[in-house]
Length: 499
Image 1 (spheres, rainbow, N blue to C red):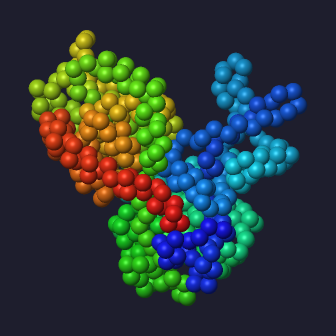
Image 2: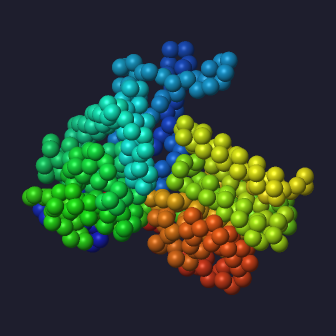
Image 3: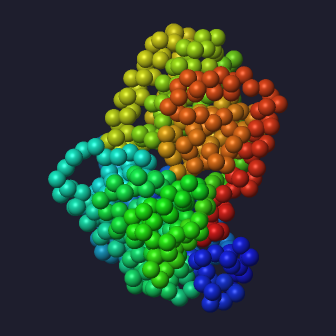
């Protein structure tokens, strides 16, 4: 069993009677396992394939970084399991597994990857993830208050699904728990799990990390099930957040709703003290460094440079939802072209988005309309100022864009962290391009050398774009060296070690 270093010994997850030799395992609990699972059928044999899951890369990288030092198991929903593509449409088919297939898949996942799968039916997924998570918690945590009045029946049904699914996770954790384990639960999908596990395992050491923002008490107390959610979270020994302000909001919310005693270190709940800390997540710097130097990335960088010879390139990469600020970015870029006409035909904005929800489809239509308006007003037959690509970008394409850009533009109106800004800094080791960063992102607190902007201030944003494009080489280098501090960028490893 590995020795605990001094930083780990003082963590609240480690009880006073824990032997100095350390702990046995970490049980990671995430909404989904880190693999997209598919099955191919050859004669009577089933072959499983496990591809890295897109999205939440920083979280999965942080978890993966522990495997060389600590024993661990990973519990999560399998996600949709796909079969062979349909012969006529070539679309993926979704499988409903028989009991024997579930057992075989569970055995393969545990032996090959240390993963314990949770199987959920479509009704549970609809109520838990598509329902309560995405229509109640996600908007609230991003300061979007619901505006559709209902009689409450749908919300009750979704809440029941959320609680039931959280109970399934908790039961699976308890089933695999052994004395000495640390249980580490991730994000808003599983906020009831710490309290549910605490009921069954009163002496267990439980951590909860919230990757999303956490709103102020004025916002959070609008949630009808606010007490149940907070009670579930307070079942943890340690609740971690991306920034100090999110941690402060949680503490003040517990005090306001329950009247609990609190201090900057946490909340006193009856005979249990819940510690609260700040652990900003980050990126796998070594992986990004390796990938950006790949020959395919270098080839695509040259292709992009040749395509836009003599032009300044501004890059944006966002998930297409209401809080990433893509609409604000486009409005500000149009303001930039209006206020600084000398840049017309000299600057191109390449905006990459992804997202497959109903809401993102509606937003894509709005984005397409604005892009068409800007290109129609400021473009010509020879030049198009805005290029919008709405699809899942491949890593080599992304790193080529981040490496060749003259500036990056991140305008989220609310974001838990935003690791694209960290990847951009790593990819700019040679060019030192400025980063224009919304003050409402979690990374803003640690990247003070970026050009900070309010995404609602279009004139201010337009000025920041102009300042970035006119910045001297000395200023670019100075800012880049400040932001590229390895410790600052390797927060993912700090977060995972702090577990």
